[in-house]
Image (cartoon, rainbow, N blue to C red; front, top):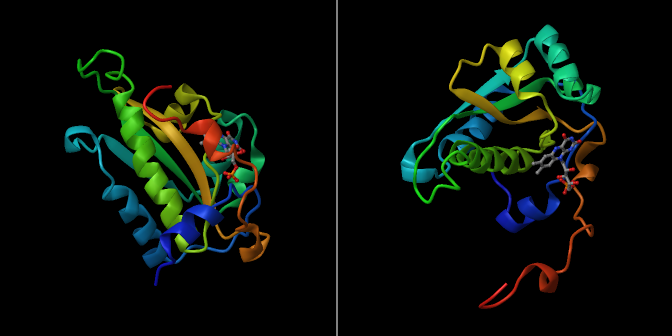
Length: 177
Ligand SMILES: Cc1cc2nc3c(=O)[nH]c(=O)nc-3n(C[C@H](O)[C@H](O)[C@H](O)COP(=O)(O)O)c2cc1C
């Protein structure tokens, strides 16, 4: 079990076409557990992951995600929620820290999914209030991200390495910006 780590991160792609095939429960649990063990500021773990399996609920999420209708084709949509934190540590990061922590855990989940041969696509284009209403997310929580989760319609072949990235020289500098 398990792929080599660099192989995983190189071949994770955003998958926008899914087979309806169900995800075995043990596989789903491993993917969720990868999120559970993620690091967070002061180990607060200010997250909750909603596993949406109900067909009607999945369909309701589509208009709340700017009509990205293909997300409902996957057997599952995972919704990462973040507790509204406001830690006064340096000011700027305070309000962002919950979403930041949830994003780290979601990255774990997405990479674990790739290891299991499952496709994901980070959905950042959504209406927080509408998604909250549909899923009964309580006050004091926000939606950080969603992803469909399922086997790619295109099979394993969709997990290709990308060439669509800036070169390292452009994004790394030494000692100053
Ligand atoms: C924060 C964030 C938000 C994104 N939102 C969307 C989205 O709403 N819809 C979508 O189809 N892809 C979305 N993406 C996927 C990106 O378009 C994709 O990661 C990028 O083009 C690189 O392609 P790759 O993931 O296949 O390597 C999002 C990715 C991130 C990290």
